[in-house]
Image (cartoon, rainbow, N blue to C red):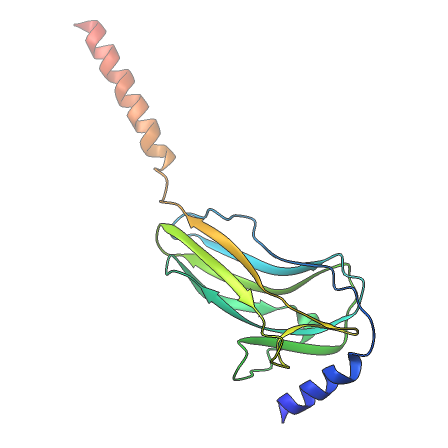
Length: 174
C-alpha cells in the first residue's frame, strides 16, 4: 500500500519542470586510518526546485570500510522501510534549500586498502531516484576511499630522537 501511495504522489507532481542541481558524495577525509570513523554525505548543491524525497540503494566494494549506520535529513522524515529500496524518505513540503544533504552514511575504516562506496537508483523502480516537483533524477554516484595504516604515534618518534641524541652524547664521552 505504501508503494502505491508513494508512486501515485510522485506521478501527480511529475508534470512540472525542475532543476535538481548537482548530486555528489562528499567526505571530509577520503583517506582515513584503520579504526577511524568517517562520514560520507549524499548532497544536492545548486538546487533550484523543491526536493520532496529520494530512494536509493548502496554498495560497498570491499570490507576495508564497514557501514555502521546512516541518518536521513529530518526534512524528509524517517526511512520508509521499503523492501526493494535500501533508503527511502519523502515529505511534503520538501526542501527548497540551494544545498541539501539527503543522507549521511557513517563508516568505520576496518582494514588497509581501497574501497568504493556507491549509491545508485533504478529509475524503472518508482521508489528510487531524487524526487522533486518537476522530475525524478538518477542519484547514482561513487566515491573511492583509501584506508591507510595507522601512523606511528608521535611519542615513539620522539623517543627514537631522544635515544639517538643519547647515543651521540655517549659516543662523544668515549
